[in-house]
Figure 1 (tube, helix red, strand yellow):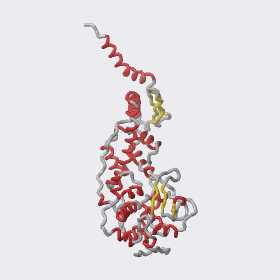
Figure 2 (cartoon, helix red, strand yellow):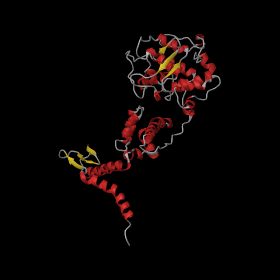
Figure 3 (tube, rainbow, N blue to C red):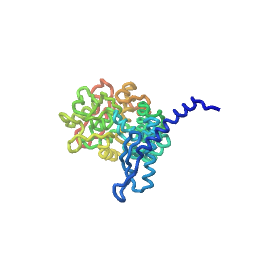
Figure 4 (cartoon, rainbow, N blue to C red):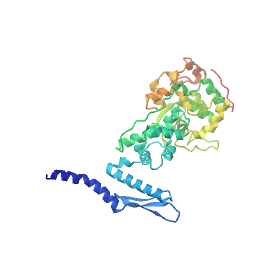
Length: 385
């Protein structure tokens, strides 16, 4: 029985990639060498046009040999199946950052997954393991915000670049009942106990819903006392979260506190005790945590009250006072309706009247008289109109 020439041709064609891989390995395989006795082994060589000169991180020959074999396989897999096959989480994260992604919360994740963990290996089980290792006992909202959200963002960008198929991650269920907001009376206690320099800042957070980092980046040129508005935008190479600059409004009470605080002619509005601008961080807000906590504890508010609680408080107050969800979405800087809905909490019908009594008037054209008067003394006492 004769051989089918076409079969031979198909066999030859099918063997070509295999022979090519063997040729790549055979020409210049990776080798391991020690620079000094007792030192770490280094990989040297070139495979498929990829030059490798790197440390194995071990002085054990058997372990170094295993690393060599794994590195060769990784390079060949990437060449044969495409770049996405061997793409690491670290490489994908770098691409994400270089295209404008947010660096907040990435540090712990990069340290946990290391330089060699492949993106394709990070599934829901890997995410759960990372959450347990990095934030044991943390609330569901913390896991969503600091683990799942950044990983999902990196994965989504990778899918767009055809690095790999998109993967969906299961988010933790968050109970809105557990998300804290302040009543007007609690806010009065917090403002009363705050240091004089912190009082305008806390009032600004409560009156605008700005994130702490956005407030600390606020420049004097972007603060408009006459119209009671502030423009939250880029500052020193940084930008508002989600890259969404916006104009916010604040009640007359906040404007009076700001005007009485001795605003600078230029530069940052809110300053450190030494009068310097705060150093901005990717995870803005930690700079004021100690001073905020001091006021919170003196006001006998729980440890669950943080600077970010002011943002939840504003959303709840603004919704109760105006009932304008469209404005809430715009002023709060949320792109997702579901997120804005999570920030505004269920509140009693009396909240609107209670806010007015404490001077928190959120309407666009509310008269100045509706705001409670302030005092310049270090210890401000709550007053009702």
